[in-house]
Amino acid sequence: MSEKMKDKRATLGRWGEDLAVDFLKKRGMKILERNFRCPAGEIDIIARCGKHIIFVEVKTRKSEMFGTPQEAVNLRKQRQIIRAAQWYLEQKPLNLQPRFDVLAIRAGDNQPELEHIPDAFGVC
Image (cartoon, rainbow, N blue to C red; front, top):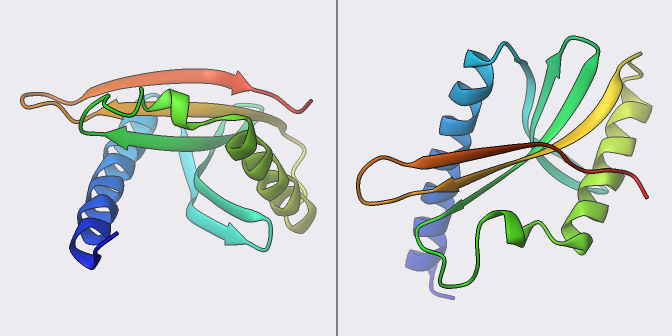
């Protein structure tokens, strides 16, 4: 993949995460972390809402040529997010119920479409 394509993907991803943060804040969630990185992986957004700590994976796509955004959060990706969430909770013990959400964003020609999937997957 060329550097130019990588830059375009990174820019699209940051734009999608900015939209996701605004969306979550408007729904009363407090953003605790963005782009949290640890030895186990990365989590796009960590938020708190009531008794829940929410680990949010944001997927942004311009088209569905390679599938929907939420389809990109496959079992392998889910396991990586769960491992990173466990690492986070070991470092910052909180008495909150963990939840794993997906925010799928389609960057259409007009208005972007956001689909919030609360409790999209769980620990197996």
